[in-house]
Length: 269
Image 1: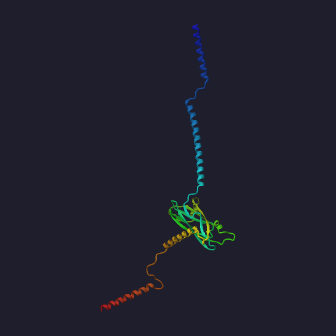
Image 2: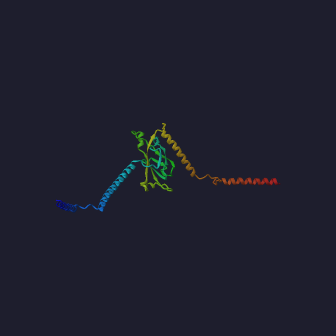
């Protein structure tokens, strides 16, 4: 009984080994380490490509938003104008009137400026353009001929008819002003302000007209100072002319000299 049980168990063990061998042949081999690494790298590459694509999309959208925001922001001014919205004129029909506007260069480089108007036949500016150094300012005088209004036209309606545009252009040191600068560098020209003409009754007190008068007085004083510097110095030497002033003076001196000689001779005797 013991012998038969031992032989039976030995045969069962062989059958069990054959079953394990068959299962091992039918089963697929496990993936190698290199294949696993390739799969991992491919997954990482796809994730990195997706990350880069998303980053580029975000950058493009950010640039679009920033450019749109910059376009909505007001442009950076090179000039500070006073007044900054309206040019106030005294209303005197049939007469030429004046007003003034102060321009100051608030940038760190020289700036050229230029005036334009919608009524060139009845308006002109002095100076019509120029170059301001950093921090430099001047007062420009604007002349306007006031036409007789129509019957149905009000004084307040005239303010929308005449406009003045002030343009600026950044230039280099030592550049002389010529109006053609604004045509040659159109892309760099900036419109600083568009001022509207407003008429006020000169007989009625108005803060705007009082300020305008002070600016005109300052501008006139500056023009006088410039003109006095341009005048040649006064002549101190005797003038030679048709009246013979130099010759007459020489005769007087000659007569005095001869008289002193006669007196000296008389005293010696």
